[in-house]
Length: 395
Image (tube, rainbow, N blue to C red; front, side, top):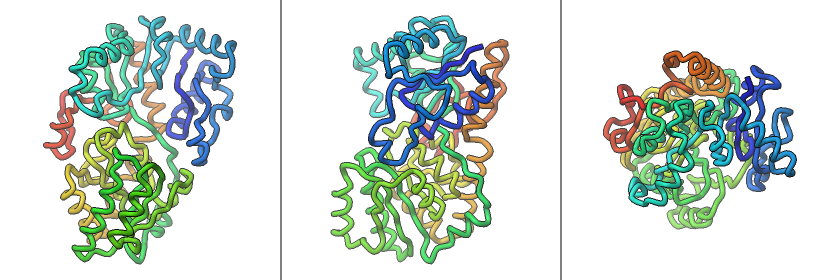
């Protein structure tokens, strides 16, 4: 049986998953990439994985490679689409397809009132009548969004991105987190949807409450100068350090020393792989409830904290600053979640189990983590329940 994975380019968020599939299927597994690694990722220290593995076909190199990739994708018994390639999908209407997708109604549900937009989604996912096509939801809210167009009914499964999982000596890791002042980390692009200004607002409020802390902000982007100016204006330069853009290896170093990781993106954040990385580095993660990965990865007050508004962000941060044992417990449980459930090896193992079930017409048997059934989570329902998704109707 031939299995093919299609994507724009391979990065470290999916590398382990792909390598594990190759280890199982050997020469029967192929990855098709449609573009070279972008300059931005290369500058951040990303490995050029398109040339790293023998199972990758670079369809962008020449016409011959493109033709070979197209033929393979059509003929393979199973294709996993990390990106939608419409010409290939048209030819696979009755074959087994797995489509990895974030939610498509990130900004607003009002997009459903635009006929051309709806037609575009239906065209890209128009094989919905094919009962052998399944959604791998790279957002906790994707299954609900697609259900509004009657897409993937009873055929949506949890998925996401799976950065490297490090095998830490736990004692050594948590010793690194013993700091003179508790360390708070924010790591992202300086974009409007990431809301870096909330870090400054939080710092002001923490100082008013008499809290001791230091904040590192890692990243770059259009709003970086504005944030730097705002920090100076608010006289917070002793409390907030801008570290600029660093490699993802250096990001992990910051996470390994941080006690608290705050993630302030809005609902436009499709997944947010830094949540995986921060959890996998033993941080107590405090994240906004509409970020795509949050309902899947975080269990409120157990392995992280889910905030719905700025007051909760402040309250939860203070709770972690005041109670070091509680903060450590959240970080320990977060690390356990990543090492035991949400990682590339587990995702590959669960995917094989899911695939075998489909091939043998068996009932779904995976109960948690990647490839378990994805519930239909409305964002307003999730807000009211404070992150408890137990009992939500499955898609």
